[in-house]
Image 1 (cartoon, one colour):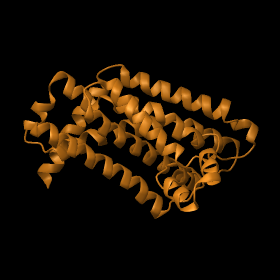
Image 2: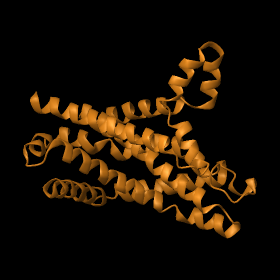
Image 3: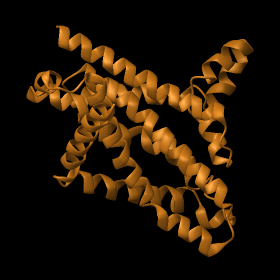
Length: 249
């Protein structure tokens, strides 16, 4: 067990060092913070709402913001290994495919968590202007991190499919877009008009939107935690199946 954790930690450190060894990580964080600020204060109407809450002006945009930024951060994880020919070397090392997958995923997720943590000035602003519900803000951040992790897990799987980072990016954006649209209110309202209620409920069950909405309201429900955990585990398992196929090829 200790050996497995050591291998995962080694992969994690290797990936994190790779992020911060180039200016790409810093550019990504700056873009993320600028877009967060723009959506919160300009499009979200932070000051116009007149309420000490981050639910609508801040967290409401995260499913859409992550739709492009998370695939951009994770598209290189396996595609780059395949492109430069280091995938075969990595898989022949005394590291299992599962350990490599988990290590890479956790490294990128930690990078995204850092970018999310740097939005603390927004929290400071809402506390300065009023008396917000700290529990709701905490739940929103937990949901946002799980949402980013779900998108990232999907991106990890698409990155293992191809050695082309652009293709990986497009595939992950399309899949994550479906995870949004399946439960987006305008889409569900359209489905209700011609589809049976059971089908609408089934499609909505695949969406991140209703589950993330619970966190926005300050509710941490076990069912929502289970949903995001299931997306992450299923996507990472799919990645391991893909890599086993590449190893056997």
